[in-house]
Image 1 (cartoon, rainbow, N blue to C red):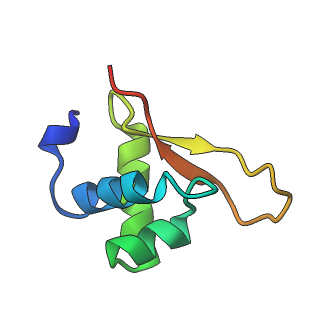
Image 2 (cartoon, rainbow, N blue to C red):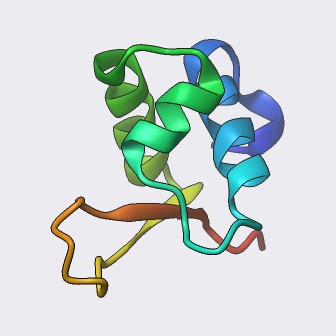
Length: 79
């Protein structure tokens, strides 16, 4: 899948992650959903599709803060 082929919630979530990525920390699902204007379930489904696309368009960043807020997401490097 290519970024240029994204549409609907997938495109909205991808843009939200891209916009939030420059913040202090990588964005978490709640941040992405809020920026995308989506409820958590559709945002979670879009994140999952972007994580499992071939090639992957997002990647998960482990939570090293110890806050147990779940994973954060970043854009996967484009080839």
